Image (cartoon, rainbow, N blue to C red; front, side, top):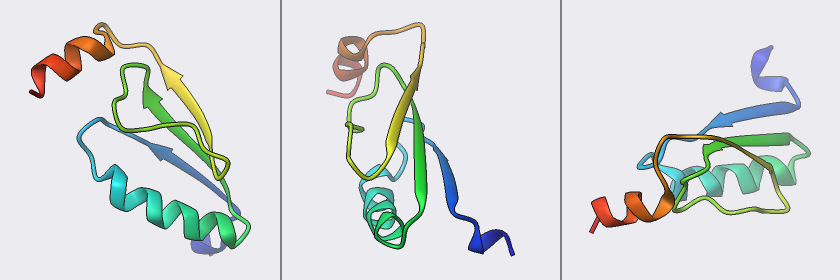
Length: 71
């Protein structure tokens, strides 16, 4: 079944439920899942981790601009 797969792709959008999702990824990693997280290069909350591979994609604004808008 699809739930038994060993690989997981997470596409992150800033402002999503990343903090809750990260806890789920930790558990899946402990169970041997291979995880790739895709996030915008202006990400504010997502960081590199030993439990997943982080890949970024370009967006037309910088991290500093995002931080300014969320203040």
